[in-house]
Length: 207
Image 1: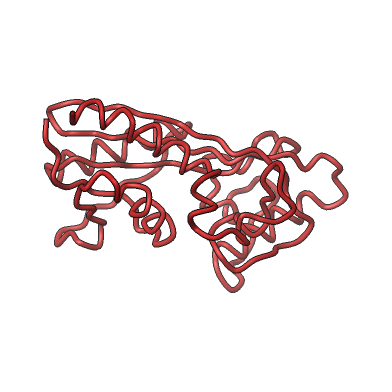
Image 2 (image 1 turned 45 degrees about the horizontal axis):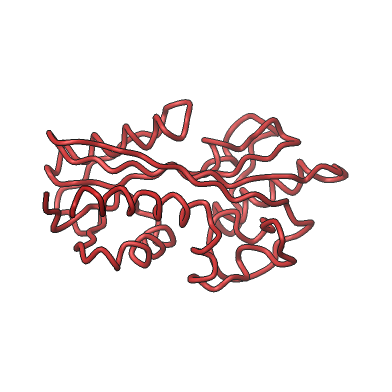
């Protein structure tokens, strides 16, 4: 089987940059949704990361008729009953802990709400979750998952990364994910782990 190009089903520039870096060794052309002349919107309305990723992969793959890699990822915080979870990207806007008005950016507001909810809490354990789905229309699909365990910082630190990176300290480190260089982050991140597992499976299929 030969795959010449793959659509990475995201509009998130940070995610796309990480996917491009991770996939470059396969020699497959990477497309983003910005490369598509026609655009469709896929609602992430499922209850699990896997269900959301499958839905995105299938809908984009069937519409564009090319192989698709789709991911759903988020942050689970133990003291908050694993919230924000699948609501990570829009945590500021859901009823849990109150609805916040956007300040500066969505990422900034999500992090502000998270830190507010964890004020005076001793348990700050958390993990990043990534579920990555590869879907080839009328052919096959497969999926992998990756985790990065750590804790929530007392305040944001670092200018790199995106999302909750400025408030997440991985296990074994004294700095937040937003203080990592991209290559260093990809070695330990949930997304890096999930994509490397996916690449191993794809290498077997492509060989």
